[in-house]
Length: 276
Image (tube, rainbow, N blue to C red; front, side, top):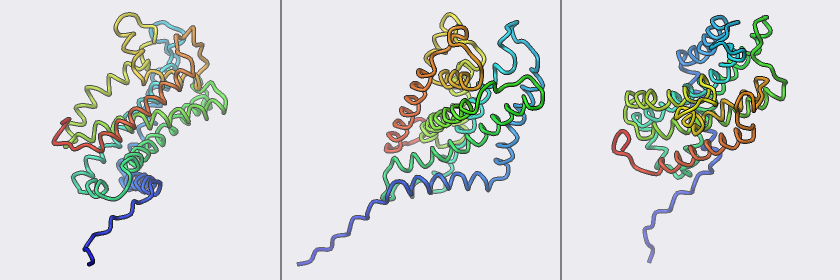
């Protein structure tokens, strides 16, 4: 006697899902002319502000705190805000019903997470590389050179920027997944992510004493900024109070791995509202 059993749908391979969702994020980005304009305009504005506004200035009387000192921190800021804002698409996808369709599809959950994160990270990298090029152009224009490095240093910086972008986009994914409104997302970003960047060594040296110094040391973004200083500037680990380059890579990779794992985990949970 035959039984009416519905066949279980075959699982879709993971890599095509990753690339498809990543491509969707990029296509959505390039179709929105205002986002493209902002992506091109933001690095140029920051380059002009830091290049012309702080050219030749010595901040705090220190010989090493001219505007070139702030270049790695500004680069990380561009990666941070671009990566975080890219994950707002998660809230939009939930409203449009696209996210629900992906969640019920026979695809590995991690592939959906990786596709969204990779797309946002590549968008952040686009702006970061533009700003990196403008940093090189600064020296070509006869201003005080920002990029005091070789081709190998630039390649190392780009590789580290990619890992930082993955970590920050995964962090944005982690926050946006529990959000039902973009207003709540912006509020969390202002309270949590902005101080995270300010206390990453972008402005304050790592040898600050007291509780502020401890916060800077336990901030994982601090090691991304420090790593970019190694690649983009002639720094001395002892004089500039920086961790070793291997420590910078290790902490940044662990940061990216933990945020991705947390995003993978939270994507398998159900939410009933903002941060619930």
